[in-house]
Structures are given as C-alpha cells and as structure tokens.
Length: 295
Image (tube, rainbow, N blue to C red):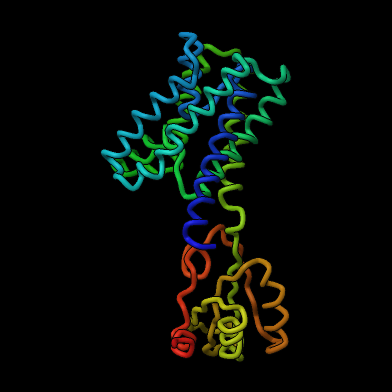
C-alpha cells in the first residue's frame, strides 16, 4: 500500500470512528437519561438545562479546545485533531435532527451496552488511525505537560468531574448505568486501539545461540538482541537471544529452536504494542539487494 492509499485509509478510519462515536451517543445515550464523559457529557448537561441541541455545545467546546491545543500543544497536535473537531458534532447534529432527541430503545441496559460498544469502537478507530478525538483530551494532555500528572490519571480526573456534574440532575439508577457505560467504552477503546499490535517477546538461552540468531534474522526477518547472562544452575556464562515476533510466528520459533537445541530454555512474554522498524515502520531496504538490482 503506497503512502497516498495509507493516508486515505487513515482519513476513512477517522471519519468512520467519529460517525460511530456520534451514533453511540445519539442513538443510545442522549435520549435515554444516561450520563457520559468528555465533551459529550458537558454538552448533554448544558442541553438538558437550556434545550439547545448537544451538538451545538460539543462544536463550541471542541473548537475552543482546538485553539487551546494549537497554542499550548503545537500545530502537529492540532492537525491530528481538526477532523474530529468538526466531523463529530456534524454527525451528531444530523442524527439529532433525524431522531428528535429520542433513543432507539427504552431499555436502559441495552442503551448502556450498545452505546458503550459504539462509542468505544468509534474512539478506538480514531486513536488507531493516529489521530485524537480532541475535546476534553486536551485538558488531560495539558495536565500531563505542565503538572506532570500521568495522562491516564488526568483523563479520569476530567471524566469524574463531568460525571459528577451530570449526577446532580440525574436519577441514581441512571448515574450507575452511566458509570457502566464509561467502563464499557473505556475497555473497548483500549482493546480496539491495540488490535493487531500485540506481539510476543521471546528470550532463548541456548548453546546454539548463533544458529538461532541467524534463523530469526533470515527466516523470520525480525531483529535480534544478544545479551550476556550467567546460568545459576550450571555456573557458566551463556548468551541470551531476545527478539519480538508476531503471535503467528511463535509456534514456528518454538519448533525450530527445539530442533536446533532440544535443551534450549525459552521464556515467552506478551507485549501490548511495539513501535519500530519492521512493525510500525517499513524495514530499511537491503543494500546488497539494491546494489545487485541497480541498472
């Protein structure tokens, strides 16, 4: 896939993500009496006070936060946020007009689960595309930058304040369902933004470390780190082969390594994500191949 196709796919993911996010909010949250976090939560609180559509408040808040982000976080961040800033409230406004403020079902439990799934899927897609949903992400990022508050803690602080604000005018059962809603979409955001990025770290102790290194480099086209260790049982120096591979390659590595050395000791660890050449960056071209193929 060339660079232009990748960029088009990224923009499509951001667009679909914002539509799913807006659908989850309008179809299942705003008309069911639930509470939620983020700019949608603030907009919902103000809308219930004034009768002005939530999408209007969301657009105003997002636009203000975009300017704040541009000033304090830089142009690059603002560019990653600008599409969501306008796309999300626009999609929300269209759906509000179509549904006239009514949820698609009166079952509040169903609204909680389906709303959480759609919102989580939408925001997860936006983050997976390398963009930001903007809005109330920006105060959390500012707290992280200037107050050294961890980003996850900042997000929870902002969400708790927004949820507490809405809880003042919401029945107790709906508040509890709203908390479940936030938990559902938070879990889904994490899961979806990491789909396909899970990798496996292998550490192999073997007398055939050089053969194993060559196998991983040449057959799997993965990087290798060689580390020095000392066997506590044998009391001798050993070499440890460390590599990060895809989950699909694990069974092959286990099979080949134990063919090379039946006594090899292997430790396998799951890693959440890997950033670097061969995973998120394309591998560098082989100079030997380039030289031989040059005209």
